Length: 249
Image (cartoon, rainbow, N blue to C red; front, side):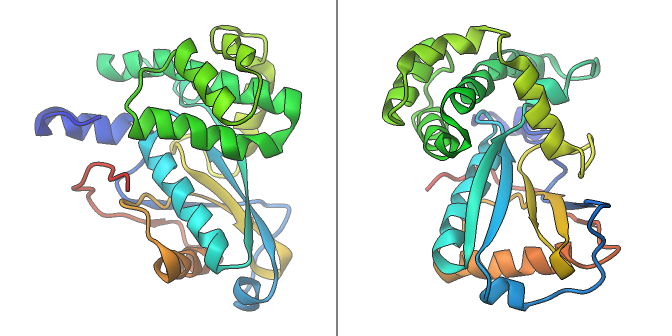
């Protein structure tokens, strides 16, 4: 989604409803956090949950970083679906170009939810990779042909591509969206991550927004830092102006 500079700023600001290069923190009030345990980073294999919209390039980069983190830290990433189209319902101030983007963003999330409902949540990892590879690397147009090909790439029934134009699974889509967004609020977008915090608690945050995705130990160090600040009581936000388009490598 490369555009002239005057347009690119609007695209970057609205595309994933993300604040510029920010990390926004939320906490599950059922699990209060009081102190940070570094041993969580190095001695326990823990589950980390990421909510994504397949159409968002920033979420795609973050997801590739998390897969790299799995290689260098004791982390298992589980993927879930949120929807930028659901998030932005009723927001009348959006630019027309972003409204057009959102109108085509329903399809991929509906296909993901349909696959999850039929096969279980574990299929989302490979399906997201298949969709993201075609959308962000291949620059293919979102539509039934892309969905069917991505489903086949992931070893799933290509007929589920029809879900992209159906409201059949919208209840499940909204429930998944709500589960991911509730702890962080509605003024952020994707990526959203829920991770283990201090004393067995859970912290949820928007971000990190990065480009390109760090590799190897650099990915691990970023994870350590993100988990450190996310587990700090009272920490909410880091930001700086984003001056680069998404870099897919």
